[in-house]
Length: 50
Image 1 (tube, rainbow, N blue to C red):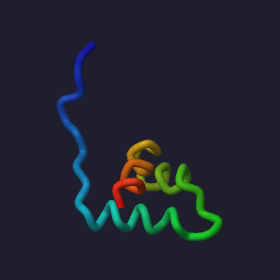
Image 2: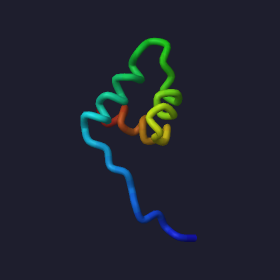
Image 3: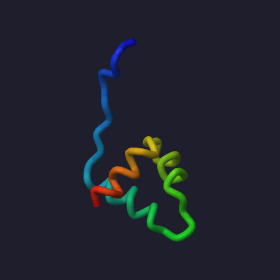
Image 4: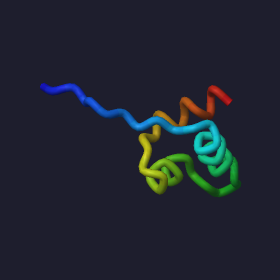
């Protein structure tokens, strides 16, 4: 099984915006992750870090 050679990196502004979107009442984190094309676990980790 080949390892992934390219990883996406996201700047702090993108992370902050993604986390802010999850704090809007009625908005689910999994929908935000899907809309931004990121993994849901990554978004939860960013939330914990902030």
